[in-house]
Image (cartoon, rainbow, N blue to C red; front, side, top):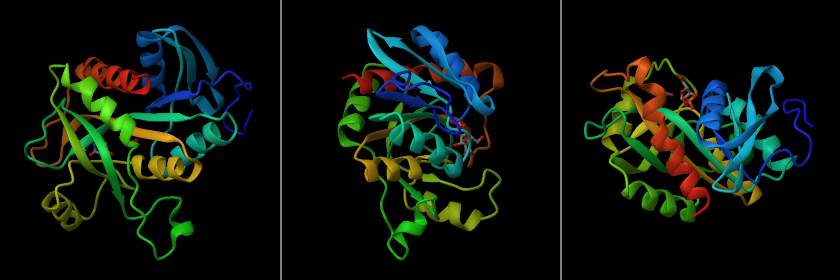
Length: 234
Ligand SMILES: O=P(O)(O)O[C@H]1O[C@H](CO)[C@@H](O)[C@H]1O
Ligand SMILES: O=c1cc[nH]c(=O)[nH]1
């Protein structure tokens, strides 16, 4: 038990999928896991443990933004010994060739800062995905109709951005999309020797201003969850 997770030792699996939204954790657990059991609801942050093809999996919300993710992922690693952490998130596209509903495998995550920045001081640490997970997710994605992109993303501290110049530079330098958690997830995984990957679904587009209709969000997120599960147990 931690200040933010009421699960008993042993109630959290070694493999954890982490959406930002606790209700997406509930939906994914009820849709993809056998016998999902609620293991956390402290502060309304939901976590479920069940099995997928016989493998134990926890699906636990991270909340929005890196400070929130660093609490949950940090406690899952330190207190429950989570070994494989895969974010399943929504993201905003920053390239014309990336479309709504496409899936992005985040190879690297740029940021202005993360909760870990105080450790690095003048160093520009380069948070990156676990190569084995990335390779397995790319292989799992190849068998699907969904278009998948592999590359760098941007982990922002803000959803309502006030730096169009910065977005332009990221687009110019090939950054695929923006979200708000991955750089800290990859940094924590590096620090504790764990495996991490972010599998993201494009929910809106910063250039075309398209957005996934609310009614289609869950069905479009299904591919991302299955890719994450297949990668975890490849
Ligand atoms: O859909 P989730 O996983 O929450 O991810 C994205 O959506 C939230 C912003 O609306 C941020 O958490 C961002 O990273
Ligand atoms: O953080 C996010 C997530 C989805 N779309 C965005 O524009 N930003």
